[in-house]
Length: 330
Length: 279
Image 1 (cartoon, rainbow over the protein chains, first blue to last red):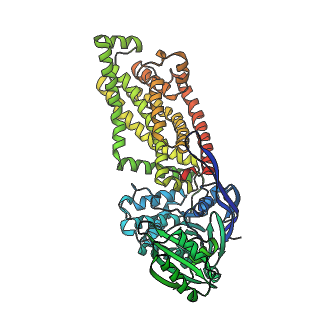
Image 2 (spheres, rainbow over the protein chains, first blue to last red):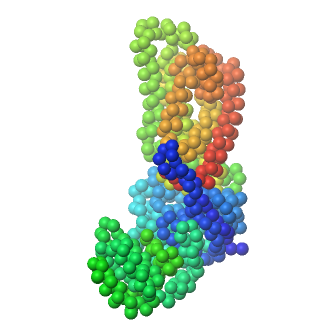
Image 3 (cartoon, rainbow over the protein chains, first blue to last red):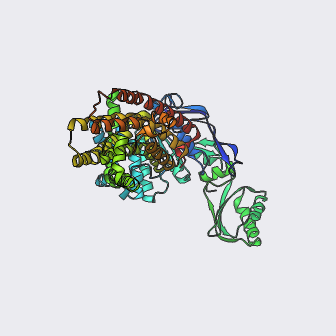
């Protein structure tokens, strides 16, 4: 038995939209029959853009949201039938820094949650000291959380998720809004947890993070797992194409259609920055070096200002583009 | 990790929730000060209005209708009980909503404790606030205006404490409603004003129309206010008022059960709709 077994898990929300008195009901499928397992000592990454269904999946796994259908077993306990047991076997770090009591100190926050997790008070003190030391907050334990920096709050949230030393740990975008140094620290802690044989689920829209940390990755889009495997396996799938990255200004929908009409081009993903009028293009093409001059000539003819061109090694983002036709940043 | 189980686990969790609330009160003392000051301000407001409307004959009219000439203590008892119900309803309902907005509610719901422990834990701090209101508002007013009988004061305090239990039940119900419909202050303010009107806070319930008195009879504060006035101003005791005390105990059994059942029902629905994460 694996510590995490997810079977055909689905979640649909009913939403009501439109003006008052003329609201119409709509069903939005947030997660659509996803299945995966996570074994002991494995980091399983759920990679997808915002709104792909990652957080809904995590919230179902930690019993905050009831699934519409399907089930998942956490250390053998059903998230539908044995919710208390599931909570005992889970450590969870949800997105954001507002998951702590800002009017309590770092230590008081951990003491509070340790009591809620039924940790023996005589042992929890030692555990709290260890965790605060581990996340580099030992010197600031008596400071109110409201006086912490964002990085410190995230590190305290991380320590909170480890309090009960659960066999399964869920991290929902653990490094979002963190500076590079703090993000690197969190990633190192997660690797350490893997070495301690915890089963870890990590959601992220950061492809480098998913690539660097995960033993296996599931790419999720519109609530469905579109592809899963080790990062190397996934990248191997797009190796048959060259990946051309172009940065340009004055890019338009019409130009995109023109690029897609090149016979050698299989996918074009665009992420635009409305405030700077800049666009990042990622073009998957056969025989990239041969087709590149024609692509550049076409762009110049269409009065697109090209500022940078490079060939790059395929990343997980390219796997996402190959599977969905869109960029992770869309 | 060494864990505790059963009653010890529940007691430990209750203690943690209680101390968390107390620490918040100590670090944000404004609301605590407000709870202590308001009974005085409301009592002065009513006292002033009575003087303005009734003029020099106001005390005579008051005594004829209430059986006492001690207007200040009579009104202060009403204000103090009203304030405690205000604190309980606002504390559990609004706190839960604040935790929902801050993101800490989900963190509590992730822990392996049942919801009853969470709600009861949040209510426990209200016993401290209630005691403070009683000591400062009621105790001080009595000490300065009439001979102090410690036995009567103790019985009045006990009556107030018994009355808290059904109030907790009502607050569980409101906690559920607030999680579902948001806008805590709308619900809490409407309920607070209704409580003041219906429970005889500033006048005897007997003056209300019959059908309103039927609703008053369902509210625990009606009995608490009446009993406290009888004990302090009319030399009655909890034994002679056994009928009201019995009703209070019955409500103390019924309301928490009903309130929690409704809260659980709303909570189950919220976990289907994802309401906990919606701000």
